[in-house]
Image 1 (tube, rainbow, N blue to C red):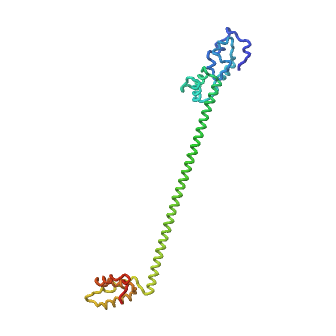
Image 2: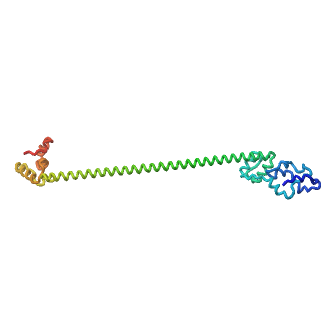
Image 3: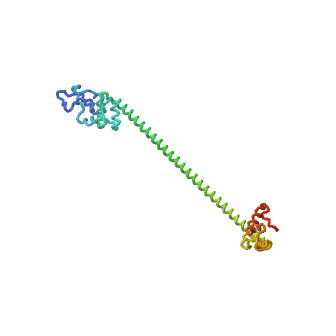
Length: 269
């Protein structure tokens, strides 16, 4: 590093190797961002008999003057623009750094503060984006869960409605089956009771008794034959009139049909 003892016996300018030991004009600005305050001079020629770093320190001097802030090209462009440095996106990171350090308004602390501000803004923007993405992800997840719950509820409602309909249909079927069963049993019991009482509901006397001929047949004989057949076939007396009407001439059947309803089944004796 820099040795202050080198100022003790400065080499005369006439004997100095300026091509090797003197810092060229503008070298301070082009050397890098970490510029030492005592080197901030316009030209090394303005300091006669000034001997710079020895050969062994040249590499270290180069590293000291190199900008150690490793940031993205985008950040460096923002720093340069804020400092009023003319730059464009075609420049490399090193070229942008050099232009920043070569600017007349360059100040290490100012650049550092400016860089920290830009990084803070980007960090805040990144954190804001992260929070927004997390919020959107949570909203999408909640919306998806809500949709799934709604679909599950609708599916359950449809299933319950289908099961209710099936139960109703089953109940209606059972009721209809029970009704038909009861009706069949009632008919069977009624028929058995009637048959046990000597009543036959199924016989049709018009197939057994000839139709009455008013011109040739005797009315008394006709009634006698009819009554015998009705008794023989065990036809209920309340059905005798309905069995008799088809056997009578149309004129007589019309007279019987005109009888009051309460007397329509009364057989004349």
